[in-house]
Length: 115
Image 1: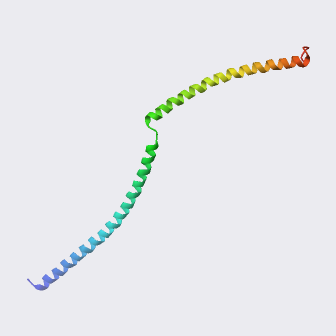
Image 2: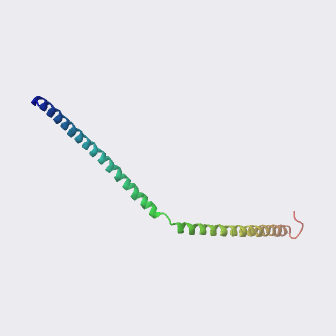
Image 3: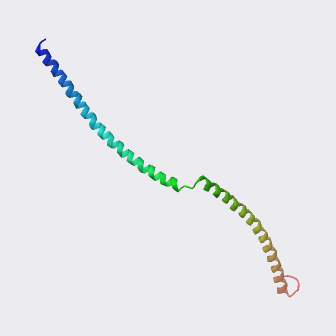
C-alpha cells in the first residue's frame, strides 16, 4: 500500500469529517433559532389559554342559563298579563273621559241642550 494513497484518503476523510461537523453546527444554530421561535409561540399560546380560561370561568353554567330561560318565560307571561290589564284600564279611561265630557257639556249649558 502506498502512503500517498493513504494520505489522500485520510485527507478526504478529514475533509468529510470537517464538513459533517460544520453541517452539524449549522443545524444546531438553526435548531436554536427554531427552538427560540417555538418557545415564543408557546408563551403566546399560554397567554391566550389563560385569557380564555378566565373568560370561561366567568361564563354562566348550563343550570344558570336554564334558570334564566325559565325566568324570562315567567317575565314574558307577566307582561302578557299586564297587556290585558292595560287594555281594561284603557277602556275604563275612555268611558270615564266620555262621562266627563257629557258632564262638562251639561254644566256649560246648565242642563239645556248641548251646543
